Image 1: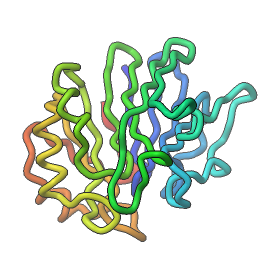
Image 2: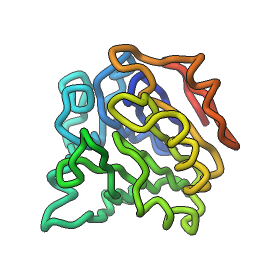
Image 3: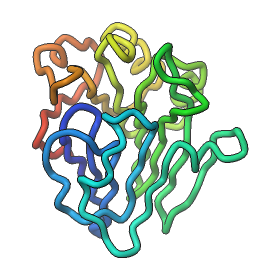
Image 4: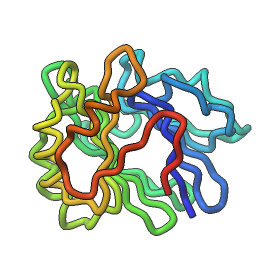
Length: 195
């Protein structure tokens, strides 16, 4: 079964059933030792794009916001059976022309990875997708806070909700995560796996 490993801040990785590895916004924590097949970078801020931390397979790919926003639209790709769909991510500190979230599809799962954002109009379309997991930011400084992230989680309607990017300059804030009032919440601390 596919699993999520949380490194901390907004950084995590997925290990697929066939042992392929996807990294999301590498920056914080440990756990970059599994060689990457795919690295996703949502935007150019230094706390989301440290691909040099990641062990890489010979034929690995890096998919950046620039690539998925080619032609001025949010594009969708199939990368060897992994669905990668760019979605809107924006707030006062993140320009939607230079920042994206992703909906990933693999191993029968659909996962929304919000990246750095506040509530977007597009989120209202996600409930119809019957997502398995939704991973939201919630620091309240560079992104939406816990109240808005909870509103977004209810709007998206995923089967499981995870909060990350809670403590600028730190890996995680457990007390803050526990205050996040949403249904089907999973709290994952840095260094933990989630199945």
